[in-house]
Image (cartoon, rainbow, N blue to C red; front, side, top):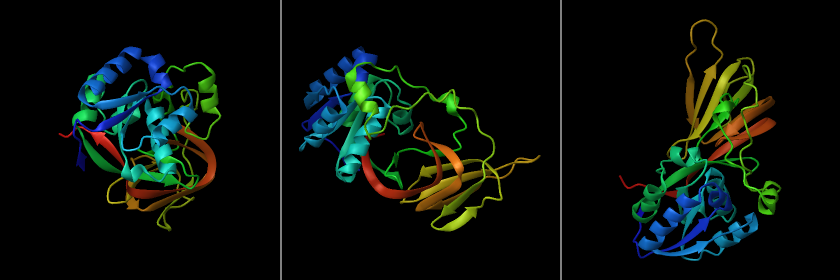
Length: 276
């Protein structure tokens, strides 16, 4: 855990979608940050400019003003640099921010900006799958609550069309049109040991980065009559095998795949959160 002095220099990266979605919140956050610390403000108009700004941060502490997609983009870039462990990230949520809020980042431009200045860095575990995709909060198989996820107001312009073609995390698709799936037949393995096999249908599997480098897994078997007791276990690697299953990771719909493995990176990244 680390605290920060207000004399520290900040690199404030304002996501272009945030500028279009809620320019007033962006202005308020920028004013609070500039009044409390030496802040260099960057206004990238493309994924390449976003990446260059973050890569040239030097000793400045990065602050992202934007939605959940901007947060995921920043963590992904730091992971590719193999730098998330040495770089505490701050976020001022603007737009669709359910992911940031679930991680403990306060809502509201003023409260979030004050947290950037006065908060503490907390080390968080991270899930990395076998395609190098990152998960900050949880994985749900199958994605049973699709209708609860909404896509933020989509900005326009060539930078956004370019963004969708890149390998950085794309903005979450509209999931309301995805039908609720039925029970799935999945083999779930923790550290190579089978917990549930294909002969036992399941209603849902949730994988969450827990603590001490372990992933927490909760499996809900298909209930017939009385509600079945969930199976809970933990391990450092989780492998799920099944027939063309989809999953939701950090509110992003992925798949179909027939096999996916997640491993835990302990304390792999730092997020600045309220001190109390």
